[in-house]
Image (cartoon, rainbow, N blue to C red):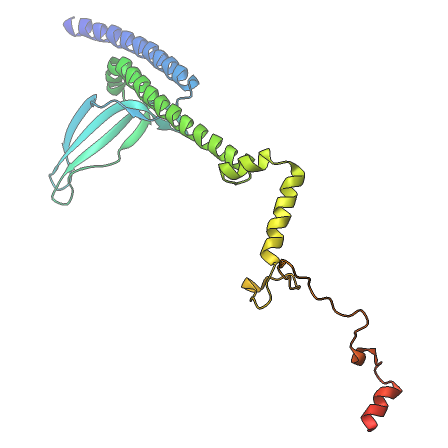
Length: 243
């Protein structure tokens, strides 16, 4: 009779456990869905492990398995998850922490799901703090980018000119600006007889500077080079060649 009573009690407890486990799974699933709707897209792992298990490898060295709960990317999306990390104790890898395995919280063993629920409020709080820090950094970067955009737009509007050059161009009438540019170009092309052009730049004419009390000597109107008036192949040229 005692065994029968204990079996009945065990059956009732197992039924209550399964019902409660199903209810807890639905609540975890709902929490996960609400977090996914926020589209956070940031990894967060609660710093303290929720479970620790020790075993031995084939060489007799200790293997410590730590389980953490967090909000991580699994199956191409972010979910509440369990990250399991193994710390190996050996001469080849002294306390080496492997990257670990990640599984969705709903797919984790029951004992890990129960332990994770105990720290879920702290996980959400830590995730909110991390998002706040990211927002502050993002706003600072936006201000930096906006300042750079304004500076580049000012440079583009002024055509790459220095501020003082741009101010002079804006205050000068259009005709005077063109004449100033033309006179500047002409001044560079005026050469004095005997002067060597710089950089091969020349107008092709010698310009004499004006002298007080003197008049530039003009060539005679009738003067011309007789050799240029002789047509090629003419009788005159032949006659000269025959002499």
